[in-house]
Length: 415
Ligand SMILES: Nc1nc2c(ncn2[C@@H]2O[C@H](COP(=O)(O)OP(=O)(O)OP(=O)(O)O)[C@@H](O)[C@H]2O)c(=O)[nH]1
Ligand SMILES: [Mg+2]
Image 1 (cartoon, rainbow, N blue to C red):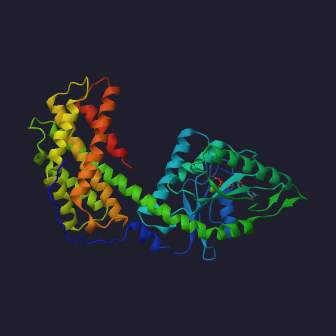
Image 2: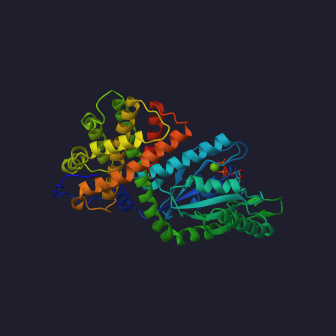
């Protein structure tokens, strides 16, 4: 593919990404998310640590019904009480979704109280069970918060004899889990037994609270590590959120371009797509806070006016015609080309803008013609191959609905 000579302009370079702003908002405290099955004693533990009766506790039905944050002036950490994990797939799915949403929200709204720095994973010390399913729960809710330090807390550790058995059981369960999930193991930092409030066995025997100071001390010890992990986690979540926002903009524009392409016009008339693509690229640049008109105009002009899309259209046309055994109507072909080009143009900008946002790329030094040429060459073959492969899986059927679905799925899955 040939492109016209690049124009260079002085562009503003350094920007402060949102994740840096969130990190700068740091108030010194870390947040501990408390997970565990219903009734294992999460809220009771919080009250004992706070030395106050703030979190509702009880027997019978699940007590805590929504995520709540607890803190006081003395503690260098906040505690986030969660809804107990229970049997029932639907309920479990809702609980997981709510916590995952809470974690993302912290980054979205730059709320330092909603970031997750550490987990206390509570297990009822009298239950003698650790289900591997429950361990998946830790991973699933902190998917975005990789390497978060986890302290396993055996609540209701009333029996001295059972404490050692429980610790051994937890060691084995987590070792097995981590062996089976070597690529993303749970970052276990300790297994601690506690009794949160006194427990009367009978008139003569009472088990007194224990283990709370050790838990507090261990948590404070882990603050520096938790803070370090926080940086990369916040950055990752921020970029992921931005990427998914950009991809929905691109998916919508791709569908719009495919619809326009389906109208019989000479193939491929790039100019008819310009309004859709310009709108898309402006919206993508906005996602990354690149609001400077000159920046986005230069990129958009380069992509749209150097003939890259027309060139790409021609090569796509040839590629589609060469798909063996596939009979494609002209309107469908146009739609596929219009959609594929728009998708490629959107993703090129998504990648470049994201790098610029992350300060991994100096906007001013980018040779847009070269980058865009390279990326069109890299992206379009992938898009064509996916369309080819999927059409083979689809018995060679190649219609508008099919194209729309394939392009939308490519757009959504761009990482
Ligand atoms: N005596 C005594 N009772 C405890 C202890 N830990 C938990 N319990 C009791 O166990 C029951 C459940 O405790 P909660 O703190 O409500 O449990 P939870 O994990 O918050 O439960 P959900 O909110 O339903 O998820 C309550 O009746 C508590 O009093 C403890 O250390 N000592
Ligand atoms: Mg509770």
